[in-house]
View 1 (cartoon, rainbow, N blue to C red):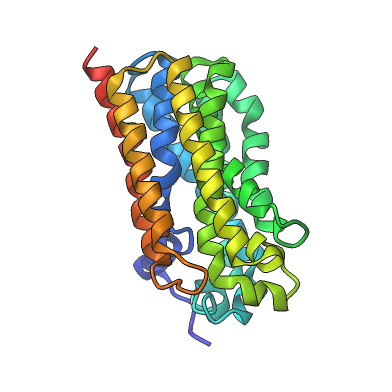
View 2 (view 1 turned 60 degrees about the vertical axis):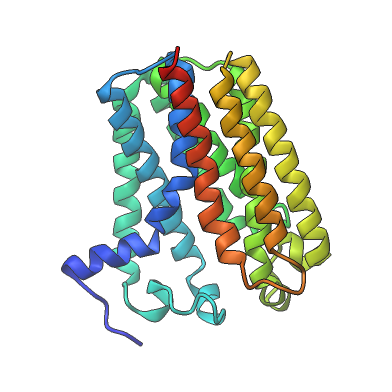
Length: 290
């Protein structure tokens, strides 16, 4: 087992542990919820507090996931190299990182407004729940989707201090989009999950069904993104972004076959990063062109 790292090396390991680059999935949709809620730019203070809350909440969730799954990860050839099972990071340090991230999240929510702070335990609880769901339900992919999907609603509340049902189609779109790409990603572990009593759609119903459900989820996601635009009076540029997302998801679905998982990483990370950034980028252009 490797020796636990310290200093700058430890910081790099923390970033790897929480997959910091994956913030690109939820953060653009959070910023879209912020823009739609505030009907424009809410100011730098609100913006940075939302970013801090988003990153700290996600960091806490990913750290909790690594802590909760450390023994499972140690058995899986794909995940045995992760920091905790490999001994690169100590359990004590991972716990400190987790509790520190939770504290920062609650402080950011408190600084935003009373409603954001009151709902912050709910938001954190949902994001932490995903880590345990594979132990008792195959619907874990949709719980992961919900954990990312609360981002635009949370940012709406953060920027306005109120909740509006108009954000719900965007929440649903993010949930089904996330579940769709997580179904693809989880194909890599279907045999391992089945052998170790873990639940997932691929391990229970097979790869073909999982891919079909992924495609249906992405169709629903695009429909909800379009409906969200209608409710929030989005302009043409936003729908161009939704159309681009639809094209990217269609290409993503073409990359993975039940008997060919060689392009899973391209389908999972690269294309979905462009989906989230594309939708937000064109939504921002829509605001700037008014």
